[in-house]
Image (cartoon, rainbow, N blue to C red):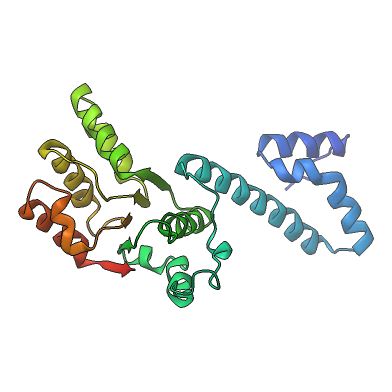
Length: 238
């Protein structure tokens, strides 16, 4: 194979970095060259350094995009939980949930507790971990979700909306508590549960014990149908 003759190597490298969209290497190229010379890096070590810089940059940008699309209402992280202030929170359970193993098994989580104990903070922290690991997440208030689905149904765009929501790796439904659901909204909420069953994970926060979920819906049958899907692969955190 004939060796390529390049007159201006700097221009060529710049053009190739731009062509192959090596954004981070391109931004830091001069500094990386200086670093390599100072450390007397070999060719392989220098290549590894370039590739690792680009990989970390792409991961960081993807993380920021996923966070933006997740629509979190706060920047809460699991590492910020004050276990001394609230000793009822089980650190081991939180760390297990933060590992995201439940997502590998397509399990669901219901976080139950009175107002002010940090249910949304826990759910947000888990969601941010999921984003960091490259998963698509959506954080949405329960009432806002069912109202949106109802509006989309009236506009005739419900199938597309359901399809988009079903692509989300982790759906977080916040504050499923004292909201009024008519039969149409109830049916729409059940569609979300049914479509995600054994395919995608779901987190629900609520201050209602599961024995009182019939108060959320038009009757015990509706509550039972929804719980049947949730309970099959469920981790309850109270």
